[in-house]
Structure formats: structure tokens, C-alpha cells
Image (cartoon, rainbow, N blue to C red; front, side, top):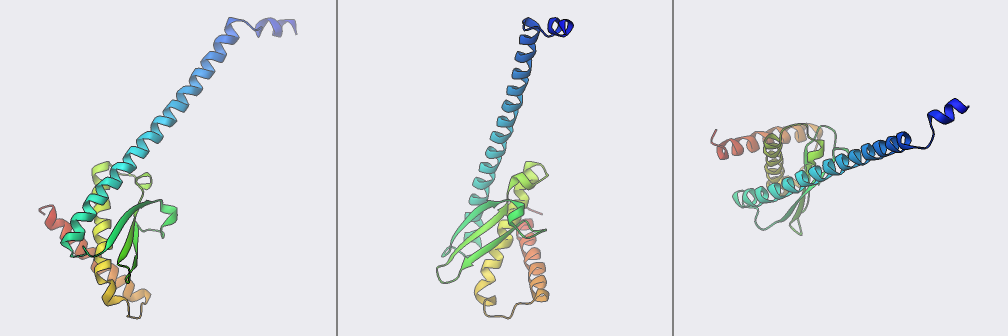
Amino acid sequence: MAYMVGRFSPGVPVLGLLVLVAGFGSTLTAQQVAAEAFARERTLLCESFTSERLGLWQKRLNLEAWTITVAMTRAADLKPKTLGNIHWDLEKKTAVIRVLDPADYAMPLPDLLRDMELTVVHELIHLGFAPVLADLHRTDANRQEEEHAVNHMAEALLDLERGK
């Protein structure tokens, strides 16, 4: 016991160990804070970008009579294997486009922004069809056909925009 007391006596070595542990702990906290700040900045950038692109595409697709917003949404709040969706009110002419939050993407920022713009354009095309399709009987088969057609239109519009 005397050996242990002498070995771990409260002195400089233990104090140094406590300082080291405390310093390491605060470094982890600082890293976590920095990572959270980076994630928040990335989300703000994506929100700004998608809002700007929404305005451009809303005008191009003649949807200016609509009040449309974009909301970053975590993957758990979207249907599996989707990158976004849109909810609208035909009478009020309001809509919310939900776009996958950047925290759930695993790609470089330029690719992520291109993908988000594709999602915005895709959902706006759905909105353009909303008055026509509202009264039709919807089935899984015709929804798949609609998704396929909307994907092709969105990609074609973006290819034109990007000079491809």
C-alpha cells in the first residue's frame, strides 16, 4: 500500500496527468464544436444555394404565382431511397420542397449542390403537373412512369443549363 501511495501520490505527475486529460477532453470538445459549426455552415450554404436556384427555376418553369420554400430534411424524414419531395396546396398555391440535408450526403460540395439543384428542378416539374394530375387515379405503376418522365425532363433542363 505504501508503494501505491508513493507511486500515485498527489503531486506534479498526477496534476500533470489531470491537465493532460482535461486538455485532451477540451480538444475533443473543440473539434466537435468545429465539426458542428462546419456542418451548420454547409447547411446554410446549401439553403442559400437551393433558395437561389429555386427562384431561377420557378421563373423558368412559369411557377411564379406559387409561394414555394425549400427545407433541408434529414434522410430519416424522407421515404427510403429518395433525395427530396414536395407538398403543395393547389388552392393556396403554396408548396414546400424538402431536400436531403447535406449531413446525409457523402459527396464533395460541388456534386452535392448539383444534386440538390436537380432535386429542386425535379420537384418543380411535379408541381407544374399538379393541376393536371390532381384528378387522375394514382397507382404505383403510373407514379413510377411519372417519376421516370420527370427525371428525364429535369436532367434535360439541367444539361441545357450546364451547356451539355
